[in-house]
Amino acid sequence: MLDDRARTLLKALVERYIAEGQPVGSRTLSRASGLDLSPATIRNVMADLEELGLIASPHTSAGRVPTARGYRLFVDTMLTARPVDLEHPGPDLAAAREQLHPDQPQRVITQAASLLSNLSSFVGVVSAPRKSSVFHHIEFLRLGEKRVLVILVAPDGDVQNRVIFTARDYTQAELVEATNYLNAHYAGLAIDEVRERLKLEIDALRGEIAALMQAAVQAGTDAMAESSDNVVVSGERNLLGVQDFGNDLSGLRRMFDLFERKTELMRLLEVSSRAEGVRIFIGGESQVVPYESLSVVTAPYEVDGRVVGTLGVVGPMRMPYERMIQIVDITSRLVSHALSQK
Image (tube, rainbow, N blue to C red):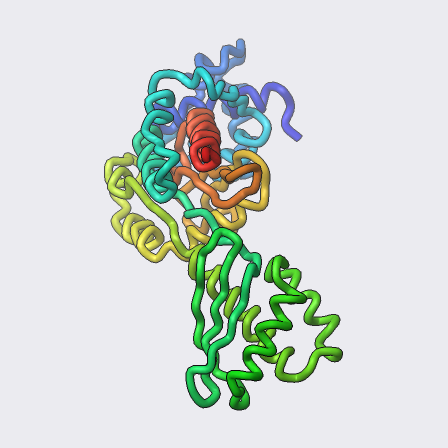
């Protein structure tokens, strides 16, 4: 545990480095912290912080910079982000609210990514609302020998079609019988619920019914995976102007590859959707953000009280976290409000 003096100096160092982007020396830290300490005492405390892995000394400077671990301690224990009033969010966020059009959900998602990018000057990312995982209606149609079309209809009317290959050939009469049975017993259940019930009921079901139900569950799972693979990214070019990345062309290429492929972004946003409120991921501290120099601030958004997606800001580890938290928090609430309008 750090004592109050060490915490004060670490907080001052992180804040000064975020603001100026230059390694912080003991003399600067003495003025920034407001503590009446000798330069020797400050150097001793900085040596202790460095030994703990909270700060590091670049080779070209006598000053210190925060490490990912130092940023994490700062964010978790020293940051006090004031909540933004949704009714009086300030001029820039108020203008953002006016740009979201509730009658065009996909446009809301695109505009939200752009707003996050413009307000943060970094990269805005938004995952599109996940499709419903509930079976409203299922139908099987014979296409040919051992080929069946599965039609899945969600409660919101969304229709997904999947062609499956079966172990044996089914007549259309058998498929109609299976359709009627499944709609009578499983309609209205979420795919995960259907999967769990199947584990318990598989022995009692007729073979063809069980096989078709398992195929339908897999088709529904595949459909959800495809529909959720929709991440809107805005402002990637903002990273070209970030001082921290200026000389790291290899790192920039890796980051642009991240935005292009989107698979790791989806994994990150999926993790974020399972928690309430704003979350901060700092680069290099986990497999979720595998890039040392990146940090991500995220929050889930809702439709009618149900979490349906996640949005966030991707930027350098040296970002103004308090401001990013406010931007992400208010944007998630604005998106939730816009998408819940009828």
